[in-house]
Length: 155
Image (cartoon, rainbow, N blue to C red; front, side, top):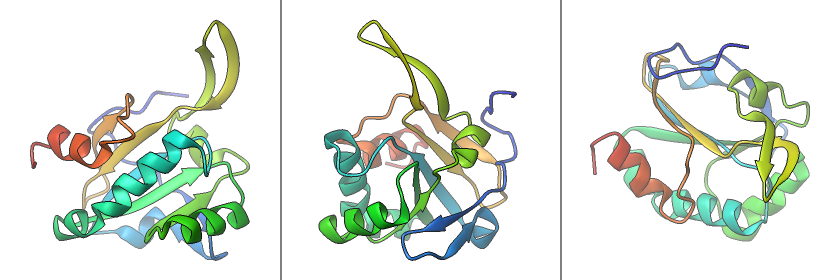
């Protein structure tokens, strides 16, 4: 599959959120979307990233952004994660890894000399017209909101 790049049309996806509702990129037409992919609920890096986005949610909403998180975790896991940390945005369950693969966020990775298959922590900023404005492959989990705003020159 071709690697997505900035300026490409964002692939349309549909998935099920923490409440069992269908969420599609088309639901966000005319809005800016922070679409982030993360490995697993309730792990230190993923929790730091989600909480940083949630702590800065009002600022992001005021700048016109909506947030959607995607991981291979189940809907039930997402629901518990959201309740535990008071998250106020949708998390999509992608157990089949179809959205992850569509965005190139799933594949072989090497860590500490070992090869495994998994999620590439990444963030795609999608503009109001459905174009990929920015891709972040090296996510700063603790400071992700400021990283996004710096990348977009709107800090």
